[in-house]
Image (cartoon, rainbow, N blue to C red; front, side):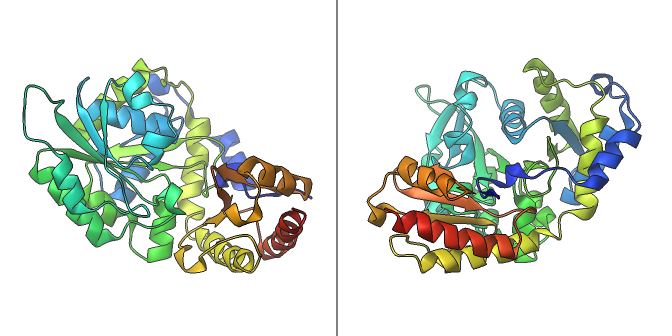
Length: 344
């Protein structure tokens, strides 16, 4: 049996989702005529405390159309170089949106408000205009860490005081909600736009949602069409999203428990460095330089033992728990990972 810890994107739709697809009322979403899409978008907006929502194919598309809707070509985006938007979205903010990134280094996913304030330059004919501050919660490359609400508020306040919009990449915002006990709407309240994914821990086969005020969503909808994201009978996607928002959020707590268990097991394996205290949601990063193996070599050894993981070169492996990984799978994975490391 393969134990797939590569990502929570590996989840398959639930039986309820598959049934919902077959009975969903459909229409042409480009014309705003798909009732199931409209229901999902309204539901998402209400949950996050915003006026309107927009269904998109992916989180990357959601982030891109949000940046485009908040800005003009040549404007500047302040963001963490370890953020998903900067690190993992193929340079789309520059290649497609025509935006200039201004990287501000975080500390384990946490931006310093003073660093952000210093990065927002005063108007000058030589500089791009600072337009957007991008935040990420949970923060992927720091290990699924939760951006504390008080820090989030301070960062948003600085941006708004200087005339910037705030976009929150909340791909896993419901993991933050479940782990912290703070409603996702509390983070959304301070941001001008939020994107969250349906296709990760929530187990949908496809889709993300962007929320914001009605004017912003209309702009984002136009940009979605411009980059080829207009969909027709998209209710087959939205039907799964409705099931996810109604039934799949609270169960994310199981993933967090299993991630902590995995971290504790990995911390006892010689050659791996893991701090279980920093595992807050469903991700575990293991530093493996002491094994003497490259990331690719260790991934190959893990695969030979029937464990799939993701590499974060030069010296980290990422494991992500999800709905298909129960406690027994975690315990078995720990044994297999130990064999893979010791085989070095």
